[in-house]
Amino acid sequence: MPTFYDPGADAGEASEALRGLAHATHTIDHPQDMYSVLGDLLSGVRSLRQVLDQLSTAHASNRNLAFDDYGDHASGSADALAAADELHQTATLIDQAEDRLNAAMSAAGRIAWHTEPATKQVAVRRWVSVVFLQDSEADEVLDMIDRDGPDTAMTYLKNWDYGEETTDTALEDGHVYDLPPAGVLDREVRDGDYQITYNHSFGHVGLYRLHTIQPGDVLEDEPTRRPAIAHTESLRPVPGGSWFEHPGVAPVKQSRGLGL
Image (cartoon, rainbow, N blue to C red):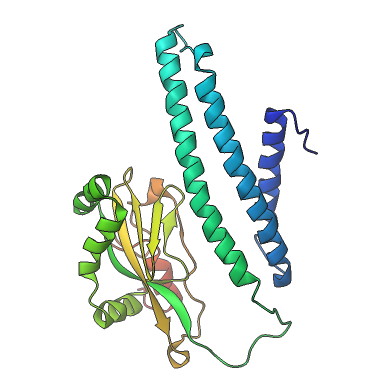
């Protein structure tokens, strides 16, 4: 139970609660329960935003007590201000997450879940890969993100999008996803039907586009789920793949009988 006065204890309890929720949502047996879960998560995100702001203020206001391990107050004070600034920036990002979560909850609230699946196929939307760059090929775009922002880089990468030709190539190669592939440390920026995913530390950047697949074109096998990319292995060849294959391609090829 929360104490409402001990930050350390309440933070530990919140962490355990989220860990439990992560396990509990691994499989959703009753889709109708998801709306109430989203409502509680939205409340939690709003509280998290408040916590981050308060921690930011506390770091800044208590910097007269801050020292480094060698007793240097100037160094400790500088780190306290740096932490305060990063916490404030994090709170700003949480604002964006709240807006997206609120939009998701609004869409979820319009769903009437049935107990039997539909018999009629409908058009579905999937993400297709437009371009994926890594190492030296990605450096120019990553520098552009630092200099001009991800929106400029996204506009630049759209030069690789040749419409139907790009879509057909992605479909043939299995570069089709429910959600754009991303690792836990990747940054993701979405604008309409496009999303750019990038990571400075591991030197890669990708652009993805939403594509509508008509009922007659839907494959019988399951769509590719969002791969959980382990960055420590992101540059290693995957089994059945190569150094130059897009993350997650080999499993798709194997599932569709395209691998050797």
